[in-house]
Length: 391
Image 1 (cartoon, helix red, strand yellow):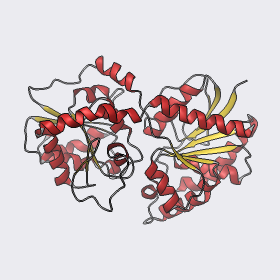
Image 2: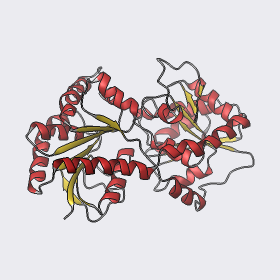
Image 3: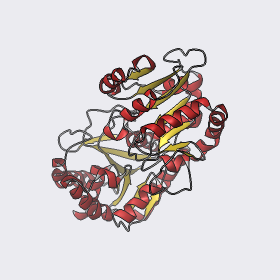
């Protein structure tokens, strides 16, 4: 008889945490009986094994539910507890803030099983001290995360944030996001380029949904400042075309910018590109950088918290404030929200062939640390260990 696991997440729409959950489920369902509990089971955009048991927690709600949702969480936790007891499930895995709060409430409400919560975002930024909702969120993190049997972060800096900012004393481990390099290379070989390139043209690529934290307007403004007309910028993601077309026109760069809303497969856009640029103000652990490295694209990224530095400058600490561009071990880091320095980094990478070739070559070794199979193994070891203790 298979051992049972419950996984709680907002939904299975596209996103970094959602992709991790989809991967885990499809890798583990042969060995474990998986129960997937979500706030929205009506919007499943990622592959999911038919053997998974689905449960809708309350009425469907969005992934970005507002502050009022926080007051409904205790009631939803009672629903989840009832489900866990009905099916005798001894282990709960939760991903993202609201599901993590549910896992904390479960313990407060007497659930005797193991709870392992996975923090995938910059908690300090997400729950800002400047808002009432943010301060309440910080209270919940301190009160409810401390109930977990184990906390997993996808970045070491995220682990430090929980310990230093929130005073979390639970055992916290880091399991970085991973990528299937062999599969990426296979798909690259068969990719159909989405558009043609001119002779000598340089293509910058950006992948990501339109959201204020992604600061995609900064990227457009920086690109507008580049002194080279034989280059283009392609940006792909949810609502990108809708939200950024007006600014591209205002900056008079529409003829050199390709804006595409969310695509079923973004790999062809990496395939046509020469370099990848991340302009975010904040991240959890950006999978898009791993994807770019796996496609052997040199990377320019803002030194935002968390993730880019851990990938591009492993073993270094965040400076108090990055004042100039940093040519790091695996890519170029630029100060957050600095249009001129981002434009300068893009210009330098495009014009300096030696620098470009260097960073293209280091992608081959940089990506080796982030092996998908190793990440899955680490998750599986955690699950197996927790269930063994439970027995």
